[in-house]
Length: 236
Length: 285
Image 1 (spheres, each protein chain N blue to C red):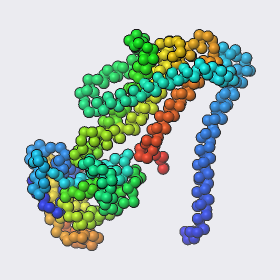
Image 2 (cartoon, each protein chain N blue to C red):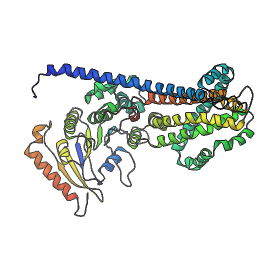
Image 3 (cartoon, one colour):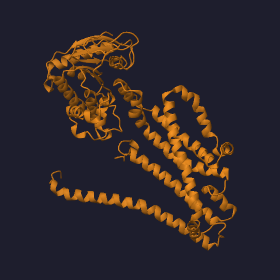
Image 4 (cartoon, chains in turn red, green):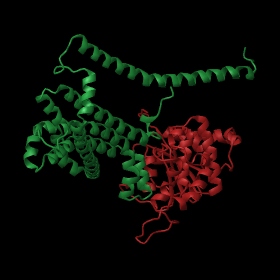
């Protein structure tokens, strides 16, 4: 696949299971090597060896929290690994928790939180390094519809505020249309990009957009495109 | 009937809550009282049987004689208990350190594991009582031999559980650590060891009991005598002299020690896991 992503874009990778959208995201993140091809970061700094200094945050499908550590320590982790002490990191950790509305839960343990709250902690952990690029791998797939909607709105609000570049993997047509400025539709066997859809609805988006004719038109268009991604012989 | 004022139902709710709390403390009391009553009943039955059937004390002494022996022979049994305890805990300590270190080695290199694990298994499955005579020949003091025997037995559960724990680290968390450029040591100390902790603690609980058993079994094989003897030797000696009350007293000391070790390791495990691990969380439904 070939894909260029501009700064400040919110790009969704939409496709059926097995089309390689998560793999693409992992390669962008630098987890595992691509068989061929490369990822270029024209606007990011390079270190002495010419390697890219990736300023990225990654949110996994599951919250992926350390169950033995408090919320604070979980969010502190990326900074801790970079050698920043607890006291030096405190302000930034609390700021990240503030962004996702969980400042009151810093001392709680993950098991004491609901599924949506765990996901918020996971997002706070991705934000604590103040990344320029946020990579999200079906982060809300396991959540119920109401929580998911709330987190979608929160994500859009934070995106408008901080202007990161977001790459968001999803298999939900509705979610992709609601969130992104551009939808990249992928097809399996072999994994490839088959369509790109620009969603030029203005931000902030909310209930009005979700119920508008443009929104249903966009979802219809994306669904059709996704449908053509599935060959007649595909059994899901 | 849905429009009952809320204030009316509140006292009822509070009363219900109180009853519930009363139920909980009642249950807690029973949990202590029932085992104690059971124990007293068993001792009573024992005392009654010995008296009613006139059982000679060299076959089965009554509980009073055993208690008497426990007090009068404390000069012999006390030091023996200390010897057994010291061997057990030394062996356990070395087994913990060694088991965890080798588990880390196994988890970091598959080839080391492939090369060494068969020998670990052989060491574990060969009955310790069969190796004890050899170890007695190779070591200069009996104490060393006992220590080695207890260590061999206690070592394996720690090793195999910790290895399993280190390998069961959440893959997503491993990815996360890689993503943020964690070093090998950071990954080990901040991720792999904490996530292996529940496995390690399960191994510890098994190893604690096994270390005591092995310390006793090895001493039977050694059959040493003199000032440095542990409880197992005192057991054998009492048997030879038909001093059955003392034999029972020594047996009771061993039992109590075993239960205490199990209790202590369970407590350690509970304290370390109670805030986060599934095993320590009371289910709500």
